[in-house]
Image 1: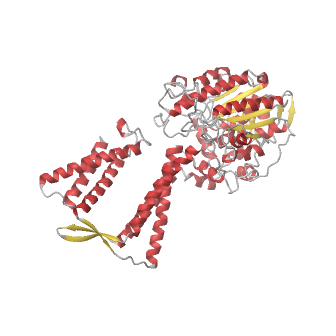
Image 2 (image 1 turned 135 degrees about the horizontal axis):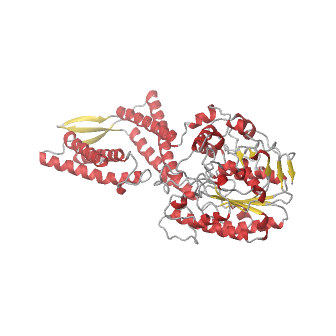
Image 3 (image 1 turned 180 degrees about the horizontal axis):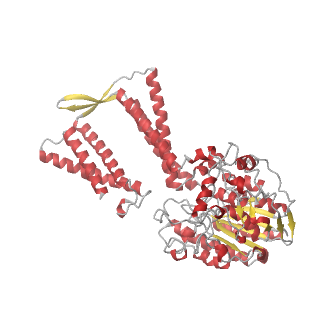
Length: 625
């Protein structure tokens, strides 16, 4: 109802301006016709434009269930703008408006105002279009993610994502700047004829003032929008407010006693891009009618998964863990990924968390052969820096595939090469690792389920939604790969960890989800060591945990006994000991407290982890049993 009222009122305003101010209607009947035509014409075009905007924030006005409260106001704004443009164009045709060319006299003050106006307008437009693009492309982007990505390598970003920059914010900003410059620098003044008298509507001075006001409005709007959408206000707390949470709970891996089994177990760690439990059916704890990940939910019956409920569930999405690189850092180090304190942080082999101790460091010290395989370039986000420094991993990425001749020259699909090839290459590398005769740690990450989803030649497309098709196919292929692993002779002595790296960033797939539904990532541990213990429902269900808990949990999964059951901020989930969340409150209360504290500055993290010096892992506290 509010939409209809706003449409009628805004259209009526346009019609009244046309009749009373411009005086196109000379008689009562003709005035009524003009008002009705203005109302109808502007509303029809405005409906189309409003639909384009609201489909990103609600359900679209044609669903009649739009959830975005600003929809009526957006539509009214379009009606008024379109109406004024229409009145102006008609006025030009009728001769009521005309332009007169005049010479512009520039003094120092005018030049300064013009330059400042242009600078503010450009910044404002860039911030507005950039924010809109970021939100519509990546959904919620955290402030820490934005800052870390600014200082870490960006090579090999998906062309699919990059192409949207040119057709989105760049094109939009250029068009706006073009019209703004022409408006501000035009030598023409605008006159309006009324009752055979000519009045100046827009003078050169008036245009400068209007240009400055527009520039200031765009700048303030762009800045406010960016701060709100990206929670940039949180950056203030990240750098100025201090928390001792990490200091009070950090279990230094160098100082914790660990016992490895004499016969060391292999570890295969499969990161599944954006693989959520929400893709399962509602009866299993998901949020869909169809279970898109049935092969994975069926596979879960063969292993151990940890849930925040009594159905399918997983870890809470914490600060510094909502994108791929951060997720890998969390699970490898038992620590969250914090914003840089120097422009060099995360940007080289020497500066990517040099003071952290990772699972790769620990296993490398025990003679493990280690490999990382991804379909993208590992330089993106500095993954090659991280895994080379911490564990001396063999880096098998898109660049290595080209160098080794695994893919044809010039070949590139999505982020590099698709998951179909990834799984085949992974089989060969795992076989090679086994043939070395050493225990091995193999890490891989899929990419096809990164939004908007990669549809390859083998991807079935029975659904109208592209992302749903890709998710379903990824689940099937992942389980096929796991079945291959289980058939290999080394599997008896191998633990397999499968986990979604983070919840999806797709801005459209989840727009109809219940806002109270807690989205978590899929997780499963297959064939853990007997020493990990039998994990009953009291240990696996109703647990509030984070990705950093996987650090000691994975080690326990391959038979490592950990004194105190904690490493860094992580807790061995097999042990049943309370996690960091659980020690600080019940359920969501503990998570929310810890998550807030993790947003603040930590002196220990900054001085020891970020700005420390890399040292090989100390094995003084490692023994065998």
